[in-house]
Each structure stands twice: as structure tokens, then as C-alpha cells.
Amino acid sequence: MYRAIFIDIDGTLRDNNKNISQRTINVIEKLVRNGILVVISSGRPRKYTENVSKESKASNYIISSNGGSIYDYIDKKVIYENIMDKQACIELYKVAKNAGVNFAMNVGDDRIEIKANDDISQILGTDIENFIYKNNIVQCIILDEDYNKIKSLYTDIKKVKNVEIINRHISLIDDNASKIGNIYYDIASKNTNKGNGILEFCKVLNINIKDTIAIGNDFNDVPMFNVVGYSVAMQNSDDEVKKYADEITKSNEDDGVAIFLEKLLSNLQ
Image (tube, rainbow, N blue to C red; front, side, top):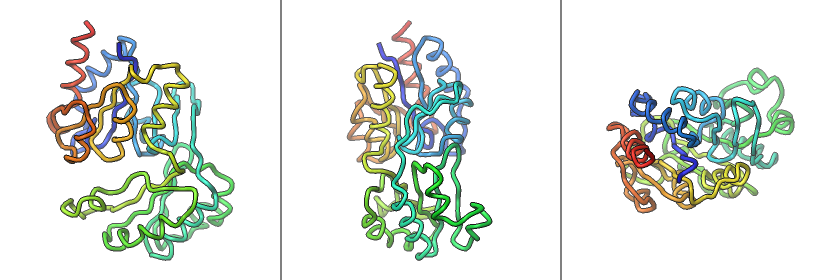
């Protein structure tokens, strides 16, 4: 019997207007009542992920920052954090600053965003170095609406030691993808990914990894697919992502998550 289901947010749980259907909420609620942990697993910061988890009636555990943080928001307990190297965070900020693009950090519950022309002291109350050394950062994001600027930073980011790019905007992988909106790199400690986050989660809660399911749509969901007992990709996933999944469900616009979970629930009853 499956004991835990890990579900991505954007392009998976929510439709393109960022709504979670009542149908999806209802089946998640039923699974939780049946003793299955439904865990929202996202690249978003902790508080954002927590809010989505509460909206969807999922379990009290969340995996955020692409596996960099695991949190129990009922007991307000940090279960796991993969904290970034301090000097690496400073260097990443300098890469963004020198390029005139925006920079963000997932710190504690929230994401602190620094626009290219912002006064650092007004936002942080101190200089960037002092802030970074006094806080635990689990993910940095370099982002901007200028596609060419962001794309050109790949080599500079790769030079920074002790960190790696763990996710990036689809247009930086697929030239045919839309280049409208914020183009980004998610950067974290090496070996940070949703898959390793799930492994840490299962270790702490004594869950056999074979008794887990992951549902996602993007490249940062592939590490989940690679470790869980059963993996489900959305129809709206890139074809390359679908190759790693055991099953393809309907798209996020067609209640794909609900359709799969309803089928799973019917097999439990």
C-alpha cells in the first residue's frame, strides 16, 4: 500500500490560472483521511508551499525549495534543511548585481527578492554579506525578464563552487519555449533536488521508498520520478520529462491530478 504521495504545484496541482479544483481538493482530503500522506513538493519557498498545502487539504508536511527544506507546519518544526555555502551565496549575488538582473533568496519561511537597482540596506537592514552570514539560505534565484541576459550568466553561475543549478526556466532548456516573463535559474547546494528531499523525508518518517508516488510536470520533478515507487507525469509535461514517468495522466487544465488520485483511491476501497 502506498504511504506517501508527493505532488508538484505549478503545472501539476494547479491549472494555468493557479487554481486548485474542488475535485482535486476533495480527493486529496479523502486520501489523507485514509492515512496516506499527501505532501506538496515545490521549488517555491516554505510559506508559499505551506499555503498551497493548506488550500489543497494536503498533509502537514511540505517539501520546498526543490528539496532544500522539509517542514511540519502544524508542529512548526524544521525536519531537514540543506543550507547553502555562505561564500557561494555572496558570489551568486555579485553575478546578478554585475549583470544588472534580479536576485532572490529562500530564507526561513519566505523569499527575499532584490531588484537590480534596489538599495540593499533598505531591504535587508544591513549589507548583503552580513545578512548572508547571519541567515540560513536554502536556495538562491537569479532572474529577469531579459532572456538573453539570464542565458548569458550560465557559465558564471557554473563557476561558483559548492552549488549547482537545480532548476531553470523551460526556455533555457527548450529554444521553442516561451521567453515571456521571468527567466530564472534556481541554485542550491550540490545534491539538492526533490528526489533527495523525498529520500530524507522517508528516512525521518520511516517510510519505504517503494511505497511512494510522485506527480509532476517539469524537469525539476524528474529526480522525484527517479526515486519513488511509482511516478506520474502530466500530459502538459515536456516529452523528455514524460520519458521518466511510469504513467501519463491528463493535463493540469483537465484535472489530471484528480483523475489519477481518484483511480488510486478506488483501488484502496
